Length: 194
Image (tube, rainbow, N blue to C red; front, side):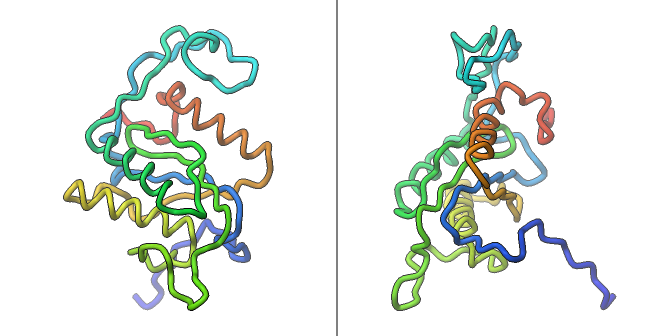
């Protein structure tokens, strides 16, 4: 048993995750339970808009544009995304979507204000020590903790996924993905029929 498998990390070993930049974050519910929202509408696609980003309802060509109806869990998540966006001066949630069993968001780290001159953290302490050095991790950990406190239970997977946005095209591709996620929900890799 002393040869326990070590979990591979999807993170770049040489990258400083406190760097200024934009990160695409995905936070999933435990067991991918669909408890955050419901997607209402079929999303039958007629033709995409000129910008390539589907922005319902009129000019997109979507005949029955899907709408997101937040559940009580989703409303609490939405509240804390907005509150934390205001709380962290050096971070900004550029865009997000609350899907039935996951949340996608683009998080802009404007500067690394994680440590003050005396070395003490200015942000709430994360509960996941493994990723404690990451600004994104602190944001996600604090978000989950605040939500769970109000839920009265933990509804989140222990880990989250992140992607470093590398350039303008990558940013626009992920921004488009967030906009179109409700339209493409039934084809999404995280889709479940719960």
